[in-house]
Length: 79
Ligand code: FES
Ligand code: FES
Image (cartoon, rainbow, N blue to C red):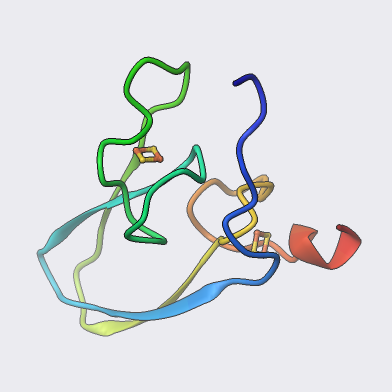
């Protein structure tokens, strides 16, 4: 696979916890979207590490086309 799979063509709104480490799925194959479940194994894709210093809501990219990686940049609107 050379292009990521579009997990969904809109973002995921997720409550994240301060200090916790998350791994965003870049390949789109994970069954645990928007996070990595190891399904990228054997492909060129690797998950993106995400850590924050506060409890907050984060808009993670579901289409895997964002120029900001894990964070939705609105690119899904052009799909
Ligand atoms: Fe991918 Fe918004 S869901 S850019
Ligand atoms: Fe997609 Fe790991 S399953 S990056």
